[in-house]
Length: 444
Image 1 (cartoon, rainbow, N blue to C red):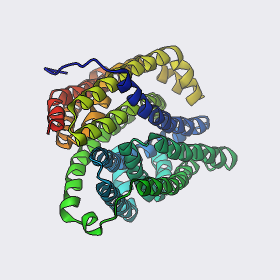
Image 2: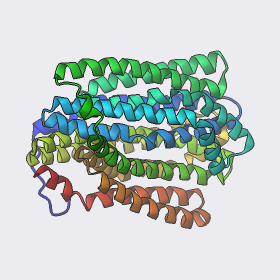
Image 3: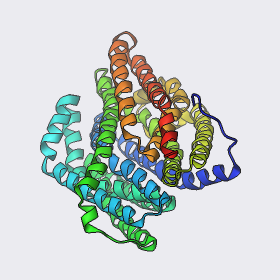
């Protein structure tokens, strides 16, 4: 990182990062595994319309939930810093405020889900068949919104405290249940697209109930008190919402860029859209795997800043970054060796397979290009440098939209893939240039 010392990383630092990262890697990998099962159970139905509609429906929810993913990211940073300062009252306060915000947002989503769906389909403009099936998906899954947002807040608590195994257990329960219900509703009961959506909503509620039980146990063990005046304090809530507003803008732009990739792909026909739905599972596997080291970095960076220990911060940043780069190399090797076989597992439609194979060269390079932005995101979350994250995302997204519009017509789908990779490079560069502010925060 520019003009900054590179420390000799201790074995303890690598051990600390790995201890935090591996449960998150396992829990996160269960998410794209779930997406892969969704794709597989629908992808082996004879009509590609079902596969394309699940892709559209899932994209809409990605836009909604990733937009409100600040509940996880913001909670992680504030909890980690409070844990570093050994402030149990503040941990309780942040948790309560995050749950209040999550339930409030989900209530609005349920109230306005009709207009939200209409607007989404208007912007995406899918074919009539795909749009009708995507609507079925949305109208079933939306009822899981309260549980989904509560789960975000709970994950933020567990990650901020460094209780990664609790995050692992709740995610495994949720995604394991979801996979089981997928098979029952789609394969056994032949519910098709609504079955996939209903399975997801029900599993989210089970995970929320289990996560709340874990959270109660951990918070009780930490001690402290529920200070109502502090929880409902306008100043405290304003601080939380200010940071979350920056992360909200960042998240909306993030999912908008990936959503626009899918929207742009619709112009090439339903077969291409179905193939994009298949290969984007590779991105999900990668993103959630690298996220384990980003979360580990966020936890350790937040605690180091809470303690005002710059040496701890440097060790956390470099140890997690070295390990993330190593794992990115493993991903590249897997995609080279097994990419074709993974596509074959996800769809049995010959035409969709052939189109998907043509995208593999882009997929193989993704790990090396994506690792930098994911790692820096985790570091900045732990430092709660939300404005820097927002500003970097605004610049990167602007460059992306210019690139995608300029490259789509002359290069077709290759132009879309090139624009996406340029966007990820910009994300890493814009954060790297302002990394010095993270170290300054640790110095007090």
